[in-house]
Image (tube, rainbow over all chains, first blue to last red; front, top):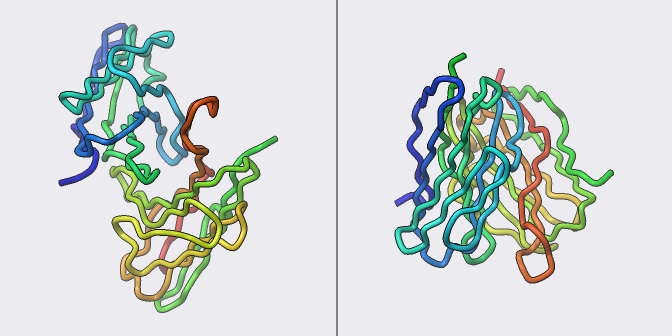
Length: 110
Length: 117
């Protein structure tokens, strides 16, 4: 079983809609959770970080964590064409290993 | 400015040749990581190091080797035993998680694109 699993998509949403990205993880001892955005040919960049249950909001982005269900999600409100990218879920597991999911490709259609 | 630097940006390897990818950071981070990314795929962990002179295998370590002689440096060697090395290689560093340490995000270099010719 992979440490981190994501729906690879592709996911397409119209401009202005809400994009919902999901991620599950296998290690219950996982301590912190990250969402990275990666444009084609570029390095990933951090979008959101969350470590406690509940929601965390930053501008148009909301991260949601449910440790009981081992589930973390990212909502992007008022999606823009510039949000079109691959979104990677990452998990910091005990031992400080840092695992990424396969990524979800998002396309925002003008 | 603090950051993490990978070189070269592009690298071409002949069959049977070993090549070394450089990764240097001046962020004073303890942990460093090497990932491989194939087209349309996520990041797969090759090796990671928590401290100088210590490193552990990730999920796809076969055909690769690393060293961590200095805190700032974590070079990756792609050996001839790696039969399909063409990929995008990313190095990352991360500070430890803990009270007062801030967000333990991973910072990435700009990547090295390796091609077998």
